[in-house]
Image: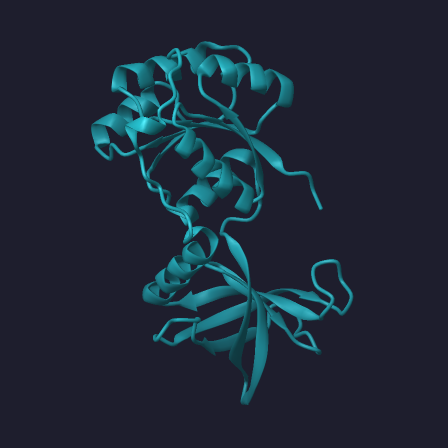
Length: 249
């Protein structure tokens, strides 16, 4: 398994540090935690993170000062910088981008959006979050119908167990209902990779499928389900009591 890429989190809030660290761990990043830009650059010098995530729960003038300090520091100025904020005004987003931020994400976290942004900035190939899931799926191939078992699911596709993997580029129609869901999901998929029995991915043989025709409501349903399974147990609850005393930079 490839080594996790590290992500430097800078936040003066202990609860926000913990919240972001758990999310990063669950999407296969190794979090490095710092309270100030100074602490962050020291950690970056030692660990060479792939990106910086700055939590902006502090006065706007202080936040802009921290971002400027990071963009002026030779150790980290070339690293992608993502700002987490609750200010969704276009003016603030434009101001943050002008200061040198690579992306601006709103809190609480939209996991799918964060995963895509982090992946794009760190060169990850996978674009959507994947979760393990045992689920019965009805498939139609030509005139034949069968029920197979899903092994993992993402907004972009699924892994399907089958003793006789279909050839790549095979089109399959799927029909399934997510756990706790009441809306049946239908989709047309394409086999993008087949896995014979005993591969490192899974001891069972199967195929990797990509959704090529799926309604927006079905895609949103999958997106909500994946987010619930990945971070549904987490609560982002900002509180002034969680802010640790620290110098701005």
